[in-house]
Image (cartoon, rainbow, N blue to C red):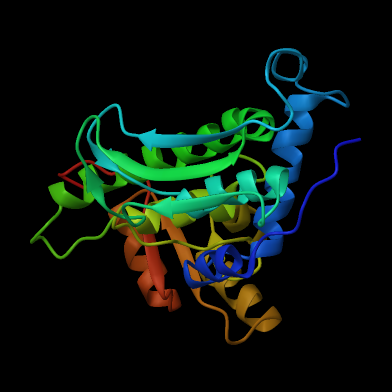
Length: 242
């Protein structure tokens, strides 16, 4: 079984400042690397690379876009190599717009361990940067309108906090993080409760201070949601005409 190292205080602080739980990120990192090794070792690297070799690796962008997840990528490298054995230089910050072929980070570490960590680090960095880039394009399209881009709970299992972090890096705004921190009354709930107003009342009777959003699919439903006292309304599949 592979032995993982703890994250450095610097990396933990970077993650925390970004609104991420360092221990949760470390768990994602361990799961990713464990999946990649599947109980063994990186046989190609161990066979071909000297145990005492060290290398410098440069992370670069292949296309323009928003960077997100540099500290997450470094968490992979630190967990595999150890804080004392690796060192990352951040050349840009998360949220930065970068050009094609631009260097974004540089790391020095034992070559064997660096290559073992490489794919997991790049998978997370590329995925999060893709989410951030698409969010930025939508946010830019809405610039000056007063509207904001909000995300959903339709996230990759196990990666919700990271993907929602990437949305923030791209200029978007997080919707609810979980089922427990805000109520969203949908058609199934309305049917079970016997109506919009009753569904709203039942939610408030359980959690008096929780914000309640109600999903509607018609203007009549919108009026009903407003009359019930909804804090927010989700317009489901509306066209411009309503």
